[in-house]
Amino acid sequence: MDLSYSDEEKAFRDEVRAFLAEKVTPDLKAKVKGDGELTKADMEGWHATLNEKGWLAPNWPKKFGGAEWNAVQKHIFEEEAAAASAPRIVPFGLGMLAPVLQKFGSKEQQDYWLPRILNGDDWWCQGYSEPGAGSDLASLKCEAVLNDAGTHYVVNGQKTWTTLGQHANMIFCLVRTDKTVKSQEGISFLLIDMETPGVEVRPIILLDGTHEVNEVWFTDCEVPVENLVGEENKGWTYAKYLLTHERTNIAGVGFSQAGLKAVKRLARQEMANGKPLIENPHFAARVAQVEIDLMAMSTTNMRIVSKAAAGTAPGVESSMLKVKGTIIRQEINDLARRAAGVFAMPFSSEAVEGTNEVLPDPFGAGPVAAKYFNNRKLSIFGGSNEIQRGIIAKVTMGS
Image (cartoon, rainbow, N blue to C red; front, side):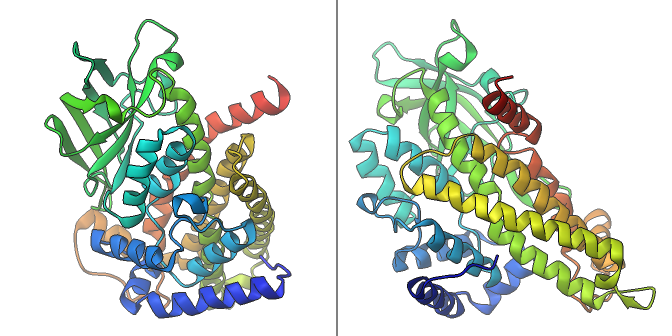
């Protein structure tokens, strides 16, 4: 998106570009640009690099150790980071749990957990979805019962689709603490140590052979009452607050901008009927439409980020951004796959047949099919787009 930056903002952009040019190593850049699988060390290393610079938590208030950037600064950094093929920061601790702790956590929880999130002492994962409780999250059954002494909750149940749970040492969970009331009113928000006896992580291997998501099982897992965030049975309020931040992040404006540039690059190189694909009227019209949508969404994203920076949780706008952002990202993925054409086939041959025999790939287009298939999930997680449209209709039209 083309913005008219002030001199101060241009200086900040130059600083960001110089930092990224120095700190994003060729190996890391190649992995991100090629949609390769980042290791735990890769992700932890980038986390530490940003923390050392003071840029790890752009939305956090300074009193909690954050950068407290304004909307333009955050936009500049996201755009430049995506253009430089920098890794995306794992959001669970920084972008999801932290806002909840900052608003609803006790001072003791803030003083203990927030510095550990910044320092990388803890790797957090999210315990929300369950079999049968995805979009209908309030129907969750994972149960936490307070023991007779009132010192611990005993947790039993299952969570699923736990992203990067194999790396985590901590999980924030929604658990049922009262089965006698309306489903939304009987949920609490617990912080659980993954090393606690009774916690088991089971991998879910995806079609492309990667280990990204997991099942997490709890069997008589004891959690100190001090790890309850806020009040018992008020977890649904905290969960909704967290999800507004998650949905805003899912939009991925910077990554869509980088993806669109890659589509144009591929379409200029790929030939169709003797001409570059980018000159095909139908393909060019789709590219133009998604570029217009992306520019509009970028402006909306900046407005929502401004509200968050002012301490206001995004409302229905986060649902709008989540829906539109995922549609745009999936459209860009589809355009890239179509532009790659036959060169998208190496993913299929390697993943399905398990061979290393791939077609020549002069344009570096191989990963686009993997990204296309993987990103079909974008319109489902964080609250499916169908659910978000219902929320939008209810809030804006009172239906």
